[in-house]
Image 1: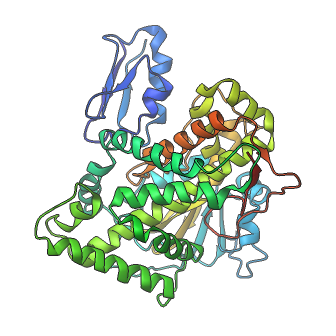
Image 2: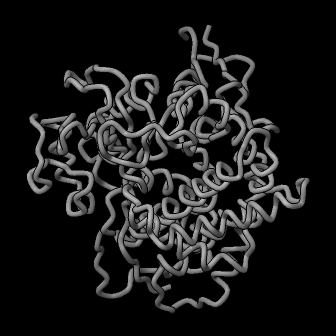
Length: 66
Length: 392
C-alpha cells in the first residue's frame, strides 16, 4: 500500500503540492500540507508523486508501491 | 576546462552583462559541453539541472557564507544576513522568520495587495500607453514589501530609490555608495524609533525583529534590508517577464482572457522560462568534485538557476519556449530548492497573481506598444526586459 508522509518540521506552506495534486494534498488551517484521501489508491499514486516532487523543502515522501 | 581570465573569452561569465543579458546560447553550450566551467579562477559556473539541484541540496558541502560576493575565499561575516547564513544559525533564524511568511499571514496580505493594485490601476484607462515596469511591476512589490515590513508610507519613494540603486550594483555593492549609506541610516532611525517604545506596538516585521530576543539593532537593520532587497527587484522581474511573454506572443494573452484559471500556470511557466534571479552563489567547504570536475575549499560556485530551468533533459527539446500548456509538473528552480528556498516565494506568487488577474479583467485588449523591442536589463543577476511599453 502507498502512503504519503508530511514532515511537518520541514513543511513551510509553499502549497505547490496542493496546486499540482489537490486530490491528494491540501493546506490546513495553520498552512501546512496534509493528506486528503484516507488511502492513496492506485489512481492517486502519480498525483501523490507529482506533488511530492514539487516540494521545495523536501517535506513529502511517497512510500511503498501501488 | 582551464580558468579563463579575460571575461570575453569565457563560455558564460557571471559578471559580463553581455553574457547574462542574452544567456540562451551560452548556457545551452555550457549544459551540452561543459556543465561546470571556470570563467574566473576558482569561480565555477554550474549549468545543468541535476548538478544545480545537487549543489543546492548539499548545504554542508556548498555553503552560503560569503553571499553576495563573487570572489574566492570569502571572509566570514560575524553577523550575516539570512542568505549568507549556514546551519545551525540559519536553521534557527529561518524558523523564527517563517512566522511572518506563513500561509496564514500571507492570506492577510492579499487584501492589501488588492488595494495597492487598485490604487495603481485607478488612473489608467484602456488605450493608454504606459511604461509597465516603472508604473506597475516595480511599484507593486516595493509597496507590498514596505507595508509588510511596516515602513511608513510617506517614506516609500525614498526607500524605492535607494534600494533600486543598491540592486543595480549587485553582486558587488561598494561600501561607500551614497544610496546605501542613506538607506542604512534611515533603517537605523526606524529601528531606534520602535525600540524607544519599549514594547511592541505593531504586528509587523520591524517590531517582531526589534523585540526578538538576542538581536542587536544592527542585526535587525541587516535583516530588514535583506527582506526589502530580496522582495522587490526580484518580484518586479517576475511580473515584467510574465507580461512580456504573454504579450509578445499575444495568443497567450488571449488564452488567459478567455480562461483566467490559467493565471497560476502562466506564473509558474514564467518563473521557469525567466529566472528573475539568474544565479545563486555558494562556497565550497572542502575539496570535492561536481559532475566529475574538481573544486577546492573556498572556491565559489555560480549556480545557474536559469540554466537549470532550461535543461532539455528535464523539459524536453522545447525547453527554451514559453508554453502555457506545459503539462507534467516539474520543479523549476527559480526560488532555489532545499534549506534556502526563497522564504518570500508565496508572497511573490500572490502579488503576481493579483496583478495578472486584475489586468486581464480590466484591460483584455492590452498589447505591446507599436515598435516595442525587448532589450535585456544590464544586470548580472537579474533577468528582465529593461523597460516594457504597453498599450492598455
